[in-house]
Image 1 (tube, rainbow, N blue to C red):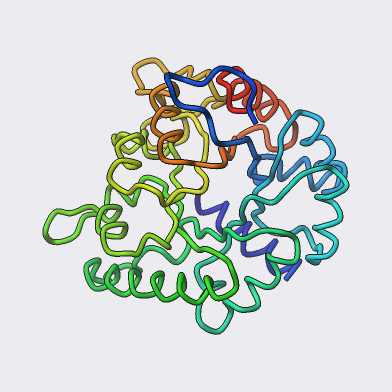
Image 2: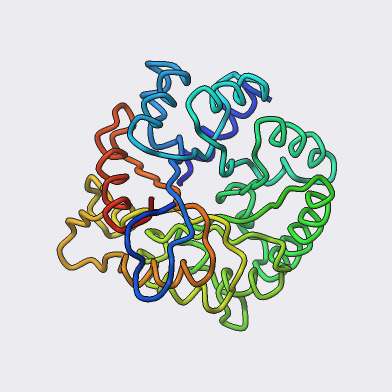
Amino acid sequence: MNLTRRSFIGAMSAAGAACALPSLGALKPVGNVALQLYSIRDYIRKNGIEKALADVAAIGYKGVEFAGYWGKNAKQLKKILDDNGLVACGTHVGRGDFGPDKVKATCEFNLEFGNTTIICPGGGNFPSKGQNLDDFLKMLVEYYNKAAVDAAKFGCKVGLHNHTREFELKLSNGQTYWDYFFSNTTKNVCMQQDVGWTTCAGYDPCEQYVKYPGRSPSLHAKENGMGRGVKKFDAILGQPGQPGAKGVEWDRLFKATDKDGVKWYVVECERHAGSLAAVKPSFEFLKSKGRC
């Protein structure tokens, strides 16, 4: 996700207000494959959400993660999902959507179409220019801890999704934003790691599941191909195509995520948004790895 993505989420939200393949090592895969619908945003605009989800299901995806609701209410979303045998494994919203004055409405809307996992990607999670990072993060931790308690009353969870800045920004004591946040929020605050962005930032995605275990109902499955200093490419899973750039070590990652109990591998391809050209082979890659 990026700035364009965050503005897209806000606009669209306002409009709608078992695996049979052998496991790696001795561990049985526990997750399944979903699609972050931002990946095909232009395809949805052209063809409609009904056809798009039918096509996503035909590829083999079992779930989707929303980033805006395409002008549909919760009852309509539920019907489209049910008609295609899909489930909602999450949604991306702005941080304000699970603030004290909105958390009830946000949870009730999501519960109506079957979702319980509400994640904020970037927007609202960073200090404004000139604002002290230490003070901001103390506030942010308190905000998420309270939101987690409030959302739990309705049977929902909230969490944070990363890009690279969460690893690049450092407090006055040298600690990264990422480590401060997850060291000080409760385990009820979900960690949705985008493994492509983590790798791009120069950090090991596998290590995060050891440091912060049991907090990740889902992850974003993405190649390292969208960040600073990295020439953009198709970023289809299993096709890093970036000479000299460190790729995601998928087999290592799957061992870590199986052990941690990650339930959903959410494919996000930020290119080819007008077609299924990236999301279909990305699904096939995860299928070849026993993820579905």
